[in-house]
Amino acid sequence: MSPSFLLPIVALLAGYLLGSISFAVIVARRHGIDILKAGSGNPGATNVKRVCGKGPGNLVFGLDVLKGAVASGWPLVAAGAAHLAGWEIAAQAVLYAQLAGFAGAVLGHCFSIFLKFRGGKGVAVSVGGLCGALPPCLAVSAVVWLVTYFSTRYVSLASLLGGISLPITAYWVWGAHDVRFGLCVAITAFIIFTHRGNIARLLRGEENRFAKKKADGE
Image (tube, rainbow, N blue to C red):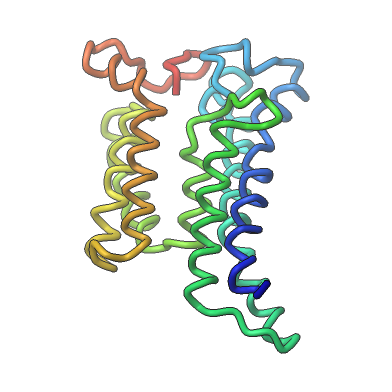
């Protein structure tokens, strides 16, 4: 079986296992807190930041970003190593492997095999995945997130609008027929799905703005 065929499959599985590692649970536990029962109960960086403080929350965010970046970036390193060893992996296969690793990490983060398929909402790990596989989309999404957050203080709204910007940027850069556009559409739909409770609260005017030790379900 050729490396070009195997790489995307291995990347998907490795990405899922890596994404399944819940740094929110690990970091919160070191502070004597079960994050699955504290605050919103969501094992993500935002809930850790509210419950445990800024330092632990930022640490979780950074680690989640890192696992997304590793999941989508390591196929490039593997392809380079294979080239040095005399094995050629098609550029298209490397791209598919990066996108598969990215998708696997998001799925693992949101449906962790180590947490009985519970998990976070996938925003931080998506940031890392975008960094490794789709930098133009990350740049635009980051601007949208920052502008929205600092003007409204709604983490959920910033995440939603940042997610919605992904397929728009992908369409502009690569076109509608590129696999990267399709992946961005899927990621956006997934972000909307995982934030469905936040959307309902936003529409009712009940969503809390970010404040330490308040849980808004993000």
